[in-house]
Image (cartoon, rainbow, N blue to C red; front, side, top):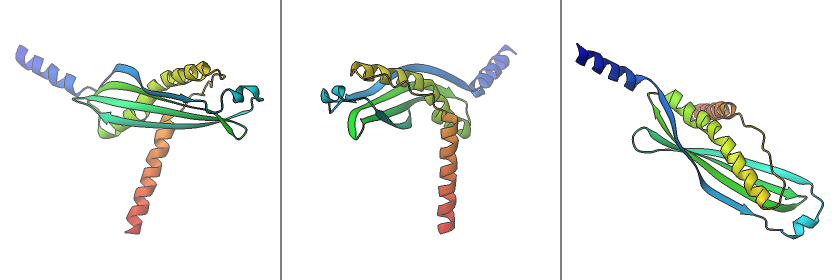
Length: 163
């Protein structure tokens, strides 16, 4: 009786969804201020361009790497004041999710966890370059994920009707 109870508990545990953050780390970091020191002598009227990207890679077992890339180009007038980029990564243990839930977890939930770390790394990098911190606003990765799904569905429908 005990053997059946134990095997039943093990089977139930293996089917329960599991999520665990294993590690957060900086994968890549870069900063360039091509117009320094001249840029520091000009009136500061910046315009900020932000590119945000995520990618994921399955590792061994149920481990996954998710990389959030923030690339910022700041111009003062027409001149590039600085370009900064951080690739903030995490290793996550994710088990027992259906395909849709796994896709959402990797595409939205994990980037939400990584964003504050990436924002802090970017701010630190920029202030070390002697520029004001960026203080990026929070990002709604759930909304971005939903937009990407909708875009992919529309492209899929367009391909289907083209054939």
